[in-house]
Image (cartoon, rainbow, N blue to C red; front, side):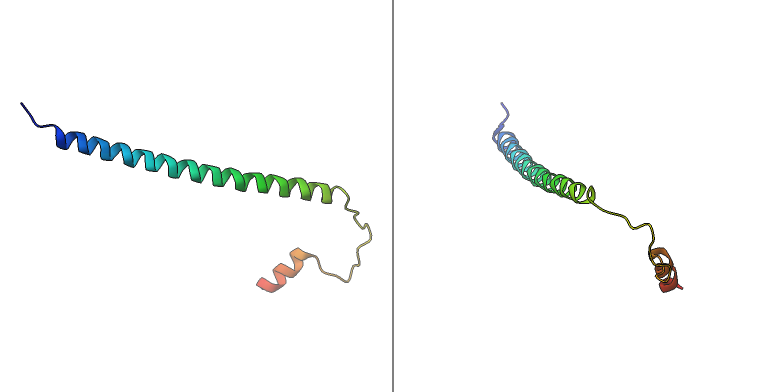
Length: 75
């Protein structure tokens, strides 16, 4: 009859590793869900703020646009 103790120990070790990986995965998913919730709140906040923005139709012509300034900086 074959001794299966080493097989059982290996199986237990693999099960412990699988449980550890699962708990690490669950912790990572929970962290990502928390980050997603913060991002969603930030987007809601920005949407609320941006909804009240007043645009100026007559911007001063002497000021170069952002795109022009970036082009000038990159030469």
